[in-house]
Length: 175
Image (cartoon, rainbow, N blue to C red; front, side, top):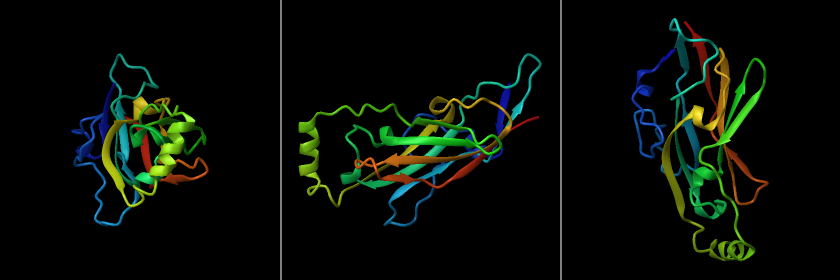
């Protein structure tokens, strides 16, 4: 089975990379803080004679950019480990989710105390970056025809605070 994206710019994305690409969200506001994502609007499956449907999805890019205050980051070695992709099938309302990178949030009480004391030092520090991930490596979508809404959640150090990216839609269709 072959897949086609409605926007050719997604065909050339190098997945699992961390630099800007043609698909990266464009941020013009120097004061921007948050997370923005982009995905192909439509993915069409072209059935080959030996293919069955539904098919496992592979190599579907999600491109994003984030800029956040360092003081709100949970204790992980990479901010992407605190970001969770959520995909909701609009017909069934079934939710699929997974972290952009596998988290390992195990820290000691002493490390947490040290992190709190350094907050004043990094209060005005922003961290940010690009990501180009493969949706199929993050969430286990069923490979069925349908429309999904997707967004990224970021859980701050205070677990009661969650930031959310923009919401994008992706349609899976078969030809």
